[in-house]
Image (tube, rainbow, N blue to C red):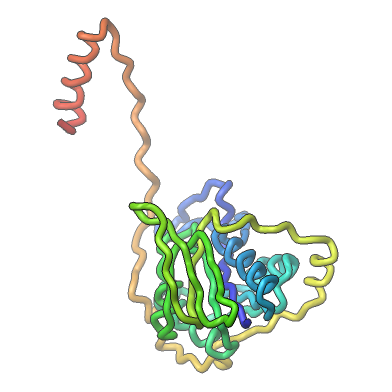
Length: 263
């Protein structure tokens, strides 16, 4: 099976982000970059499928030069090949344009299964995976917790959580799946894996290799314009109500009705 795992590099979620002087983006200086946590589950699931059913795992990531770091970390986990989708004209692409670019890469590489995280933790849109499946005209199942492949490798059964419990969806392959936390536990890269990853060549695909016109993607073709970022409003200091339960209850109702205006 030819399995593609799509990964994205995002700012480390353990650090505090600052808005830049322009007010429409974050300040990128001194940021620690990591693989999107949900995408790490996608890589692990791709490796599980390979171990059970054979085939190869190719990790694909779109981004600037530093994106090669997360491609190598995925190779160290056990992925067979790494592909870096990189071109200056890709900068500023929205979710649809990103899906369009990745669809060209997927079609060029070939695939039976595409896996990616349910969303990226930087923008949280969760749109690239479903949009990619739509462009490729293949089935997709989002936010899955379990994935089983039939012995003939033609059908996949995906389990996901819904309000009423768990839902199982069967689709024919090829198909795309977005994964969420709980589907597996990503492995640590071994020392031999790290050493092998350093020697592996990462394939680069630019706009020319993908046959993409500049007017199809990038900031100018974006369907979404981010105009302003702002910090969450500062939380007001809480109030402690004094007195017995009857007095405190009366004061609470008064505050909820006249100050908070929620009742």
